[in-house]
Length: 183
Image (tube, rainbow, N blue to C red; front, top):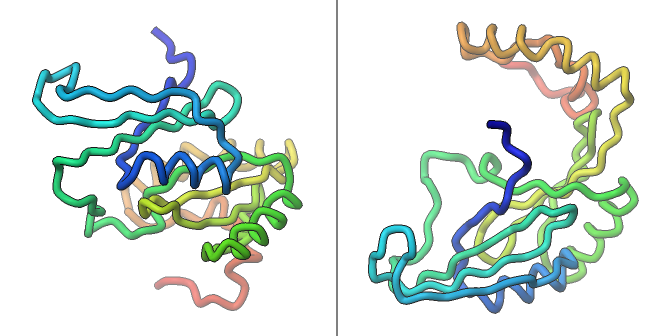
């Protein structure tokens, strides 16, 4: 068996209609499907829900569940807010800059662009508190090959030490200029 692609990724939302409208307005995603039931099909548990699906481009689907009978949404308090996020690819750094301006004009706080050498990103939150990233690829074939060449060395070193290996430190050198390194 070989996975073909992600069919959809599902998250919880506070308000399905607000979520659809926000993703349409700010990320130009098309609303493609909705269904709702009073019972969960897989478990048969009585738990009404609205399940919505948005077109994230190239066959990628972003889905949400609104669960009116469940306790209020929360986050894993042990995981920093920057860790769990959804990253969407855009066509250029200029699109990042233009989108950042549009989001900020709509009152949405945006971090970045952040230079990861292989790509640049901006970060912001949707109305449900999910962190989103827009990324524009900027890496050359040589840079991509250089990063790929050290992936196993980095992973194996991390597995043994739980300290950041320096094999690919060049990727964030500009972002960390002047920032003291950890002991």
